[in-house]
Image (cartoon, rainbow, N blue to C red; front, side, top):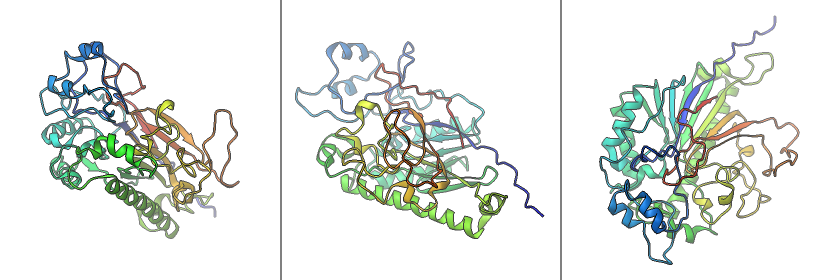
Length: 388
């Protein structure tokens, strides 16, 4: 007697947004284009200052004018809590997606009450909210990174079961045959870029307080990577052994093909690759390892893609279950399929799979608003829905 095929799993639907930066005042009504006060950037011209002075608090505006020759920074300066922030007025339209996935840099947890108010508004629209912590979530807290984690846990309690903070956390969607793995994925800052990043990126200039520097940042990166590897390994073992509800319903041997139908969505703030994760003019530049860690390919653009690394996703046990990877932080919207190539391909170049049996396809996706102070449009869509 043949084994019947299980019913096809419904696709999980997430409304995906990141890098909204609600700590900034809203743009004036006549500006519909979001984004980007990108890294690194010179002081605004006199005409630009005059243009934006009508809606930027004067103290903040003064702080971004730097003496000639001073180093550019990778982020704008902080804005104190005022009625001009965007937490309670930023519009997130309700779509058909039951879940809201926020991939970090939503605002500052130092604005705790405003951040909570924003989440409560969203909790009325969505069945559940999933929040990845970005680096901006930790800005200006006296207790630094540790205080940010504690405040994020407090948000979960105050939302009464409507919020899950994805800080090295696994969530199983049994009906959809999907596991979500979420963490910040602090980037791996390279030795080559360390000095420049340490002097220019706000994370290391006192905005994340306490004992936080490049070394602490890199340690957290390694912990995030090891956590992701361990979770994928555990999922693979559960699947092979038929342990748990996910394996029982969607695991190996449940249909004639013998293949597992168990899918994984990874959600991080920092990018898992340098490839197509930011504007082309920024790829491989002096700040890039503050924003990305190369996990998809062997090597990275700063050291050469031919350099082998055990961190390449193809070497992770269970990684073939990853159907999509959502991220933020780079202020760039992207959506493409990675097919397991050993090196990134140039336009028109044929695929070069790791081996002939490779059939993995991972959707790499980001929907990032970014800093809106530039007139440049990055295709951010507040109603973007990710189906997995």
